[in-house]
Length: 351
Ligand SMILES: Cc1cc2nc3c(=O)[nH]c(=O)nc-3n(C[C@H](O)[C@H](O)[C@H](O)COP(=O)(O)OP(=O)(O)OC[C@H]3O[C@@H](n4cnc5c(N)ncnc54)[C@H](O)[C@@H]3O)c2cc1C
Image 1 (cartoon, rainbow, N blue to C red):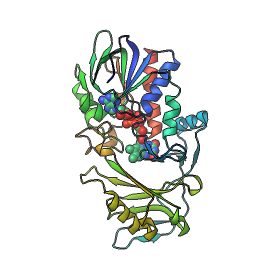
Image 2: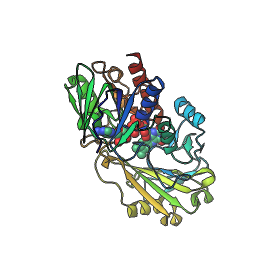
Image 3: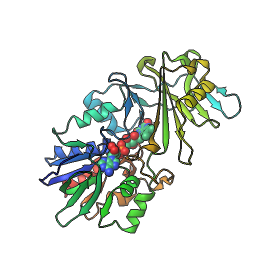
């Protein structure tokens, strides 16, 4: 459990996802005293991976796209290994008892992947922070705006600062952190109704000895209107190693994530008998992660509130929003999380 921090900080950042880490980096570069409080025992939030460093597989974000300059700049600055998404081959379409092969791959677009997972990005940004900036296992439960600044009460202890940054999905923030005094009805409603990007998805990752689907001229891309996993993509490392497929099972409308056995059965139905024996199978159910999707937030589907101008206005000049959902550019993406961080940090530095 964290102890009390007795000295006030210039800013406290709630959440060590990529957005919170990027805020902290900008603020420390401007010479400010910063604390990052992270509820989970790990960093990265919706960037998360399985496996051992060198060949990790993303259980959260997978791709970045041409024109995402903030991600590209970090990749370049830190020399993060990347490779192109595999596109070649035919896709599979399943809307009748037997899946159909369709010529070409209309499902994937040119994009890049982090060869050792998006955790490389997390580790690179976290590695720029002053020692002891981040506390893990620190669950922020209440934020009180005072005349002097903000006071954050945690699962153990409290922290004071001039500014607080909510670097977590707004719908999760307002459901799990008591904000005192309350937000205006308009802002509270906006935050409560802004969906958590990918917050009600299960991501299924299957690892194989080799990318057998490529041998059959398949791209690894597929759409299913029948199984619980609705889309599939090749998620192999550079040159096809490690060989992996991944899929998304949407859960916003209810239902449950597929079990590993159900996932393997659907993979086999889509890609043939070679898919029946993965060497590893992961089911990451993001709807079941309370620090991503707070209870009661999984059904939200109205994405028009992303990047709403109210998220760019600090509450009482002290409480700032920074998560991908609050970004006016590339909201939902890693790029959006980095853009929101720039905006929030800029407002604090200007103040
Ligand atoms: C399955 C999946 C696939 C995706 N695919 C892509 C993709 O291919 N490309 C792409 O660009 N994006 C993708 N995304 C989205 C991308 O992961 C997010 O845009 C990005 O990681 C969001 O970062 P963030 O810092 O805004 O929020 P988060 O990563 O959610 O960080 C919020 C942090 O706040 C912490 N927290 C929550 N509550 C508290 C509390 N009370 N006290 C303290 N800490 C708290 C959380 O533990 C978390 O670490 C995907 C996401 C998922 C889940």
